[in-house]
Image (cartoon, rainbow, N blue to C red):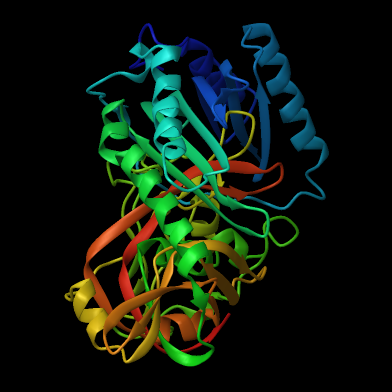
Amino acid sequence: MSTIVKNLMDTDIADFSVKYATKLGASYSETRLVSLDGNSFVLKNSIPEISAFGKTCGIGMRIILNGHMGFMSTNNLDKSNIRTEIEKTISMLKRGEKIAVEEELSREESFKVKDIVKQKEKMQDKSADEKLALLTDIDKALVSQKFEVSGRYLTISDVMENKYFVTSEGTEIHQEIPRINVVYLLTVGSGQKSVQRYQTYNGVGGWEILKDWNLIKTLVDESKSLNDNIVNGIKAPKGVIDVIAAPEVVGIAVHESTGHPYEADRIFGREGAQAGESFVTEKMLGEQIGSGIVNVVDDPQLENNGGYYRFDDEGVKARRKFLIKDGKINEFLHNRSTAAKMNLKSNGSARAAEYSVEPIVRMSNTFMLPGKLSEEELIEDVKLGVYMKNFTEWNIDDKRFNQRYIGSEAYLIKNGKICEPVKRPVLEVTTPTFYSSIDGLSKKVGFVGGSCGKGEPMQGIPVTMGGPTIRLRNIKLGG
């Protein structure tokens, strides 16, 4: 088996492992050789804290023998060790044949490709001082406000993700993806009169992404809105009213109440004792779950976004998935195993957090598609309502049916105009009611970053979520 990657990782060991498993009788084998090189910096209340610098490299391998699948991983890339580990896995599969469940993978196209994400300003060329200076500048801007920003927890991290994926079916894929992540937790005020704001920004690319985020202005503006809420905020109205939800609120809603329950492994019960189950079943495909203007997609090909990839961790080419189309349940997220169960092709939704865990069904960039209205047009048609710009807390049940979002920056709407801020409005609703209540969508889509957790052991992966500003009619609001 030839290699398409040179001088980046020792891909020969990955090629060897697949060949050796085939020699021992495997009907299918695959190897993910993964190298991660990253660092992170923390600034807490103007004081630099623990910084981390790390490099990991190892392989994760799946082997199918007589219809049964086994998984092994190791960071000891000595050929003799790899040979021993493969032999152990083959032996385990033979011993467990009588009790193991047969595993079938969907038939997929093989690729030999190389995908390297370019950086205009390489993160690896930036010094530790430069990265810490970014956090320091943000911190100084927050301290200089006329009100008290009593808690300032700021982090920046970056990692170069280098993967080589090879299979016995002829696939050879090399991907080099630079990922950046910024997380902040702000506390404005003190004592009983304080509020907090937590948020993540992530993306794929170089230092130039950080410039696009304009973090100093973003965090200063957010601190001002938090202070305004403390000083001028009133109690949120309760009862049945209209709600205008901005992209951040829409994003968490589509991630939690569409993305997760549409993961096919949840639908088949594989995640029941780990990340939860789903209210969705196979028979619900085509069922109306929302108003006809609602379209929710998952698209890993969005460049610069946190969930970006061109090929998933099973070597399947990425594509946009329409989870909800014209208000109807349209498609689930699949890996090769769940796709085979439904006699489908995989739609490229298998991801693994690192080499030592198996790829499972995951989201990437999940968002609602825009409509035709301006945000002003959405608001001007509301007599009494609440505008929720972002949230401070969310909850959802294991089946992703009952959900609850508590607003952070939020405002009262009276006769089509934004008025005073309101404190902690509570949007509590079922998933079908949420999507069925939408009667207007803005033209502009906004995105926010996040880290999505799933699996056992827990796999945290970067994702992006978002959508347009939406109008929800006749929603019960608490406060």
